[in-house]
Image 1 (tube, rainbow, N blue to C red):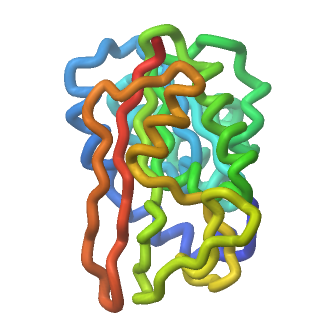
Image 2 (image 1 turned 135 degrees about the vertical axis):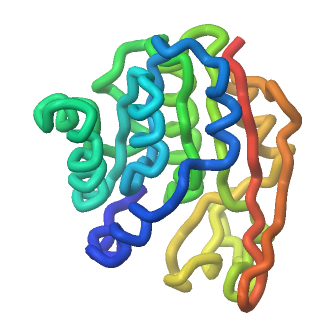
Length: 222
């Protein structure tokens, strides 16, 4: 979740504003109690955070980008004071959730964010922190790119000596991403006491030059 100029670009921010809530999040919460406390990690411009607030959930959010955080706060201020939105939407890193106590959330939403870890160690720290803040029985909704992800038609290249770290899978050819397949994801989440509530699946979507390969998981804390 390292901050860079791409995520601070106003045009990019507005592009993310126009995105709809995640297709898995809506049915997942259809029957959930409205008193659920939910953390949206890597909230970007708030597509899921705003949906959660609209539905009346007790929502908090975090992102590394100052511009994305400001936009999410602005959008949330429709439902609450800006000061409250400022307290609920935090600029920070996914591997450090020290602002939250242990076992406080019913749901952690982590869609398209763990992959941004520049090392497997950071990736593991982020997953460990997500598990820490979840209540027992809490859920973690995850989506992240898989090792065969090649939206630009080029196979990602493994970084020597860095497990699960690849370059060449994003707009910046040298950008480091941490990519795991479905079985590897299940193994790593089990390490921190999170187990599949539904089968973890890998899906592909065709792009203009290649395809997006994403691992979708829903994990529950034991």
